[in-house]
Length: 124
Image (tube, rainbow, N blue to C red; front, top):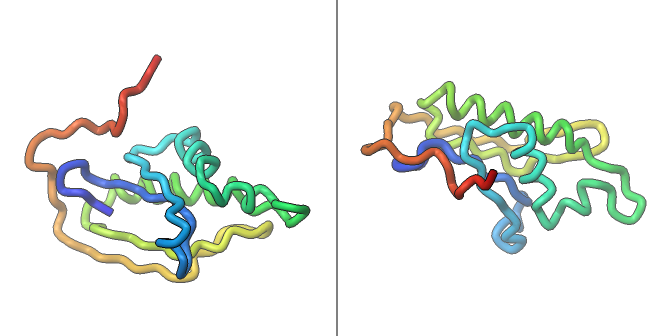
């Protein structure tokens, strides 16, 4: 989604019809680095399911992280995309597949004042 103050934001989380029940999500501020995408996926409570819980096959986590990076680039390069919802994205051993995709286009909107492009302080 594109926030009028912060600009583009990417939410990564458990999806599907029970998305509000799971309440399992994290927000990223583009540009997203590979480390950011990896950290976001591994921060989710459903991470244990993605990595193969109780002998289940591991999901294509690398493919999911690549999808997040691609969406980050899209958010920065195409300001007309006001919202893009991929829900759910099935992550299995053979890849990642968005099941339902909704896009809302709008004219590009720049933040009213220059806003910091960082959600929290970066410690060195």
